[in-house]
Structure formats: C-alpha cells, structure tokens
Image 1 (spheres, rainbow, N blue to C red):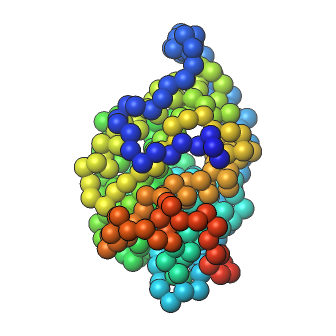
Image 2 (cartoon, rainbow, N blue to C red; image 1 turned 30 degrees about the vertical axis):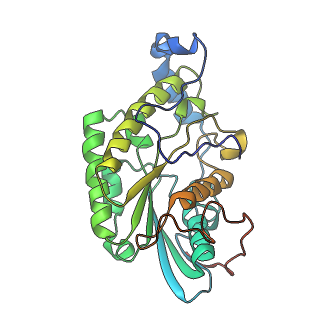
Amino acid sequence: MASLDLPRDRPVGARRSQGGPLARLWWLGLPLVPLQGYRLKRNLPRFADADGTIGRVGSGSRRMSVVALGDSVTAGYALDHHRSSIAGQLALRLAERYDATVDWRACARSGATAAEAMELVSPEALAGADLVFVSIGVNDLKNLHSTTRFRRDLGALLDEVLAAAPHARVCLLGIPPLEHFPAFPRPLADALGWRGRVFDAIAVEAIRARPRMFRIETTEALGREMFAGDGFHPSPTLHAAFADAVMAIHRLPAEDPGARGEGSPDAPAARRRAGRAVDET
C-alpha cells in the first residue's frame, strides 16, 4: 500500500512524470499506437461486473447511504461482489465511523463515458445519499473524445449528480497514471498517460467550480497487487485504498472539519467491524 499516493490537493498539471530521456520521446512511436490498441482490445482478458449492486452493512440506528456511479471502477469490474468494491468498502467505513446502518448502491456500467453515465443518474437512488463516488473519464480519453467534448459532458454529469443528491458530498476519482498500467505496452502507455493528464486537469477545474465536491488521485506507479488479472482494472486492494483515501478527507456537511474522533485520520487504524453485511442482487 505504500506505493499508493492519494494526496488531498495538488495543483493542476502537477502530477509527477517518470522516465528518462527516452521516455520523453515516446511520441516517435505514435505510428505503432493504433496497432497496439487493436491487439490489446483483442487480447485483454474479459471479466464481469460485480454482483451485489445493492447492499447494506452495519447495525446502528443511524441510517446512511452511499452511491458509486460511473464506469467499470464503480461497476466493480473483475470483482466477485460489491462488498469488495468502492461502494461496499465506503459503506463499511461509514458504518464504522458513524455507528450507522449504511446502504450502498452501484449505478455504473463498464465502458461508460461521461455522457453515457448521465443515463445512470437515478434521482431515486441519489436523493437520500450522504456520499457519492464518481469514476469517469478513462473511456472518454481512450475513445478519442475531444477535450471540449469531455469538458462539456463531465460538467453536465456532475451538475446532474449534484442536483439529484442535494445533501451529499461528491468525490471524483482522478484519472490515474495510465502510462504505468501493466496492461499497456509502450508507446501506447505513454500516449494514454499524456491524454490522461490533459483530461485530469479538466476534471480538476470542474470540481473546483462546484460546491460539495472533492477528489482523490493516484499519482505514482502502483504495485501489481493493485490491479485485477487484466493489469488494467483495480483489484480489491486498490478499491480498499480508494475508500481509505476518501474517508481521510470526507466529512458530513454538518461536521466540524477540525473535529477529532473515531473517523479522523489520527484515529486508531483498528476499528471495530460494523456488523454482518446484508446484500441484495
């Protein structure tokens, strides 16, 4: 887990670049990128989205709700069950922190772009949400959407989420350093990484312009244990790390940001488990 860096704030465009002088000349291999992309699409292992899109954890009298919305990350791609995804992991941590009974729901679909994710915004699911986690953008960039289109679609999606979830804080997952993903050969990895940095800067601007939003990001190369079997999607370990990063920042709107307690970053790492998970499919 030490290789995971999820800072609270970083200036736009400040994500660390890695590699020597040859890595900076990746653009010389651009003619190979379409062929590498075609081979990767044909050969990448296929998995299903996770079971258990609706579930509950905890046994406290307080009732809370978390919604995970967007693409394959929030769909739990390559995971057996949403207990191990960001949705279930956030629900568990909320239940522990607030001694609550927490419902989770995944409104997500693998392959979704920002525009397609707007179809997944459910007013019924989001109306009572306390926390919404959004993962979007990687499909837009790999599908060669323009920056203008992504800026427009992402802004519209976030506005819809905020309107449908009037009481929730909304976390946007930063676009990861795709140049370091095990699945991608060079120079395809470098091309995706470059576009990822551009799209991520757009996402940073989008959340700064909107209330109740924050973000987490992965800025460094990740260990192989952070990836599923395809070397592309996150493993349960990385989903858990995402949830820890969210909870290190997240506070309910009514809470004093300076308050210390069970859920603060200084609290003991070993917290009591919040009861048996009750899942529905």
